[in-house]
Each structure stands twice: as structure tokens, then as C-alpha cells.
Length: 300
Image (tube, rainbow, N blue to C red):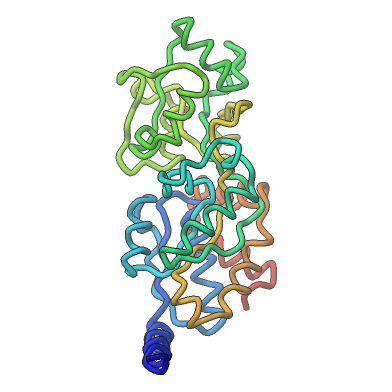
């Protein structure tokens, strides 16, 4: 029996080693950037890679990796709150970078998914408003926004269905700060990325004066938007990390060191600059990722 199990494992690993490594990613500029960094890093190491970046939102990528349709994609530690609702991860754990990473890693191990080391950045969800609105009404935090809303202040925020529907995103802001948006205060844009929602807020499209955003967005300053602070910690810490099917990692163990090294050099300022090159300058995520990796000596 033991010999049969060993042979079965060998066949499984051999099959995984023979197939191209399929890389996925979400739709926003940073996700595409990180996805391309994974693609380029693996190809530079001589591994055969299929590029399926720009695949879809969190749910799409999650289903794909669990089904074995993709093998690796960049995920965020804070999404453990959403991905593992049965674990009931509290705000204290979600706001601690080390604890939320350890929980994500442990909870996903049983699914055959390995979380590699995250970058030391926090791309958490934020609410962004035009600087003029923030200055006029003294909006520095989400607590200030709650006060503004209760006083009847005009407000309409653009965001994706995921931002409005997931319990750990806008509903978490509402529950933590004690306000509730009406349907007419939301502009739900299917498949929207932060640059699109921020453009809507900057331009006042359809009465919008606020946007869903991420902490590392390079578009905020350029569009003269302000990210409201979250002093009560409604949002989890979102550090990006490559997650990979464990069977694929066992077949290619060198991937751990390769991707850990690529992600280790990323900083908040670096990602903001790289994101801006994609979102504002119109450069492709691949070109920006390749230039960055070559500049750091990570690929040839």
C-alpha cells in the first residue's frame, strides 16, 4: 500500500511538472502588475508559463485556483476575512499583518493552496473624496464622513459590486462608523477598477463625489483625491502575496525563493509609482513590471 501511495504521488508530481504554470490575476492595475511580475520571474527561471492575468475579480480567481484552472495568482492577506467566513476572523487579528498572514496560510493549507511571503505594503480598501470636498467639510477620516452624512451632506460613491456587497468592505465601514448609505448614494459599476471609480469622483460623473480606492493607488494624488483615514480599523491589512497550488509548488520547489525575492523588494511608494505608470501614463502592466524587475536585477 505504501509503495502504491508513493507511486501515485510521483505520478501526480510528474504530471504537475510537465504542465505549464498558469498565472492568473485580478483586473486592477496593481493586480495585473503583480501578475506580470510572477509571469516574468518564472519565465526568467526557465519555467513554462501560461499567462491568464486580468482574469476577473477575487471570486473568479479563487474559483479558478481551487478548480486547478490556474496555478498561482497574487492575493491579499486581508481577503482571508472574506475567503474564510467560517473562521470568523475578528478586526484585531485582521489588522495585525503577521496574524492575518498566518491565518490565511493555515486556513488555505487544507485546500491545497500555499501562501508565499507577502510584500511589506498595505493595499487596503479606502474611501477617497475630492480634496476640495475634504477641505470644505473637514473630512480627514471615515468618522468625519459619518458626521457629514448624518448632517445631510451630499454624497455619492462609485464602486464595484464587490466593494458594496462584501461584508468586509463598504458594509464594514458602515457598521464600524455608524452610517448606512441609501441606494441612490451608490453608483455600482460592474467590473469597475479603482482608476475608473476615481475618475468618476474627480469628474463628478453622475453626481459622484467619492470613490472606492486602494491604499497603494497611484491615481489618488494625480486626480487630487484624498484617501480618508480609518482610525477604528474597519478594514483589514491587505498585503499582496503570491498564492500557489501546493502540488505545483512541490513539483517546482524553486518557485518559493524566486517569488519571495520578487515580492520582498516592493514598498508602498514603489507600488504607487508603478501603479501610476499603468493607470495614468497608459503603459502596459507587462512593460512596467519588466522594467522594474530588470532594474532591480531580478530578471535578465
